[in-house]
Length: 379
Image 1 (tube, rainbow, N blue to C red):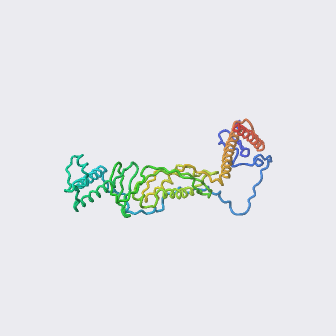
Image 2: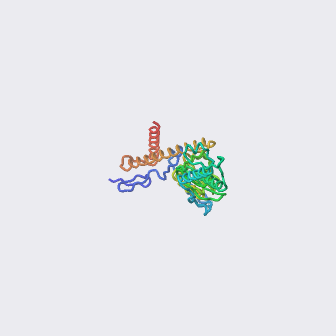
Image 3: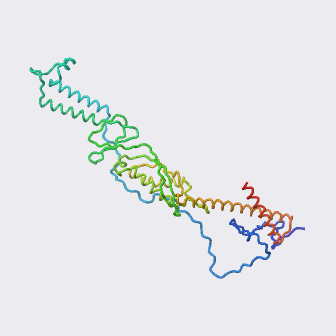
């Protein structure tokens, strides 16, 4: 004889769909005195007058990480890097030597070179009858011109290095930039301002900030950058290195204030996603540094931690959240195991249980499974 299902005892028969033995299960913590009650009569639920129950509050949704929506500070459109006046150093050296040779020839032709020198070099002497040289106005002009040419040629020589550029200016006016290496010549009247154009990185000190919940944080950032436009880096701002550091601190404060540092009891974006935080920070810094000729390649948070005054409290809160999630998972697995066990026993006809016996069995199985899981995990 086939066994039928009694709608009151919850025992499924053949061909019927399995129903959950423990209805309305939840993964929240269940007080023991409510889970294992021995009274057989269910407590009637008396509806209370009043407003309808409101829905559970929605989880907090974190705002997306910021994009550079604010307009960046405008730069001078006319202040753009261009090639400055430069000559190969070998040409300047040859011209300087030629000027010195011309000065020596003028002095020799005036008879001002000692006789011992002219005799040693086997050169004719151009002294007067008294053995003295004569410098006329023409020779003085040639001597001054040659000396000035030699000073300009040798005074404008410089050594260009790899990774370093010169920004040239005259009376406050930008005249161009020099990125050549080796021996080069520029006008000695131009002011040379060296600018490092190598790929550089800067690791910040711990910077104060707050997250979306107002919790005090300390963040360390690594920025990889280089000077792309030497004219703007040298002339558009007083100190481009100080400017970049200030912008890093401001951008970090904007990014960290959009998300919480940790989501203890919910699955939501947090500042622990270093890749997303780094991408947002890099976008902000690129927009802010472009007007001063700086190109930012990457800005990545190296460490984000709680400030010392709140670190201990937040550590305890994190440990409590981890423990709560662990107990939640264990309780869910125990409830599923008890439901499956009772369903198998009753569906195969091994036991016939009324409501009281089913509650006792659920109680015993729950205690046994929970104790077994806790002992195994503790070991």
